[in-house]
Length: 104
Image (cartoon, rainbow, N blue to C red; front, side):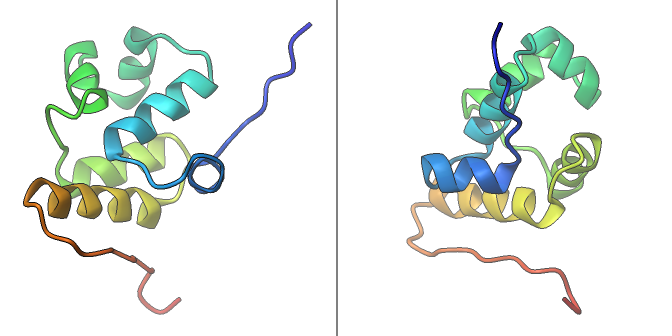
């Protein structure tokens, strides 16, 4: 018998440190023990596109990232924060991003 631990994105970051958007998707998928094919279907994208995201070859746009967070019932602002951090890193800009919901 195996015990399955459910992590959300915030718990993953606390446990494993800062991550990329692709690593976030991969870690969430692997935690759920789901294949790329099934996870891609859950997200409404092709398995190849998911693979590109997980490997860091592509980044989604903001609306897509928010859509993923909603489909995964996770924190939208956390997904946006990780995505923005990746955008900055891709440009070799040394900034840290913090995103909070307006009015929160």
